[in-house]
Amino acid sequence: MVALRVAGLEKSFGSVTALSEMSFAVESGELFGFLGPNGAGKTTTIGILTGRLTPDAGEVSVLGTDPTTEPVETRRRVGILPEQQSPPSFLTPREYFEFVGSIRELEPDTVSARVDTWADRLGFASKLETLHTDLSRGQQQKVMITQAFLHEPDLVFIDEPLVNLDPLVQERVKAFLLEYVDRGHTIFVSTHNVDVAEAICTRVGFVADGTCRIVETASNSGGLREQFLAYVETTDSEDVPTLKDEGSSPVPRH
Ligand SMILES: Nc1ncnc2c1ncn2[C@@H]1O[C@H](COP(=O)(O)OP(=O)(O)OP(=O)(O)O)[C@@H](O)[C@H]1O
Image (cartoon, rainbow, N blue to C red; front, side):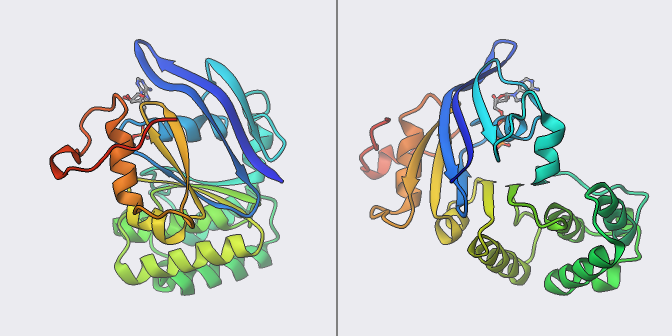
């Protein structure tokens, strides 16, 4: 079953073309990686998939909803870990999770049990009653990861899930993501981190220059990093690493 699908997406901001004929689909149960350099169009695509942005053209479907016409319904059904967003500074993690739980229509006992599990998993039990403003960046990231999964949605969008986390917690998050898709849920991960994509994703969409090319990580023989850098070289993206000096052959663009 298809969890999400975009077809022919176009999006410009003034004279800047952010997306150009972006098309791909993600099946239920996939851990799909969206891998691209700065400015490739990843955040813009997630913004459209979660109803925050409206495309100039193209079709989009998320769990059978259309986020361009029914954004509230789409957001009700998914979890979102936005890029570089902090929890409210004036709340503690426990207060914030109670707030998120009420919006997500969860029973207080369910919220409490899930928060305890997440606090143990990511190691922030001692910080549950501390104002967010007094938490480190990594501790705030743990809170943001928890809120995205609190209602155990069928589909979760996560932007750079491991940023600011220490290596031990990174391993725990990666293990959780794999377990979550094993249970039949779908995860869409946007990242710059090729190693993370290669380690956990079933398929990867290389994003560059506002468009996307799908690569199967399981049958990937040439090394994801080399393929990715070679792909980016074939686009018009600026400020990206080059492999030309190392004698690699670019992968032809689809
Ligand atoms: N609100 C906006 N106004 C003008 N230009 C924008 C806006 N949002 C995005 N852009 C431009 O659209 C392009 C795609 O940006 P986007 O944020 O989607 O990239 P990204 O892949 O998420 O990048 P990064 O990895 O650096 O976060 C960039 O050229 C960016 O400058």
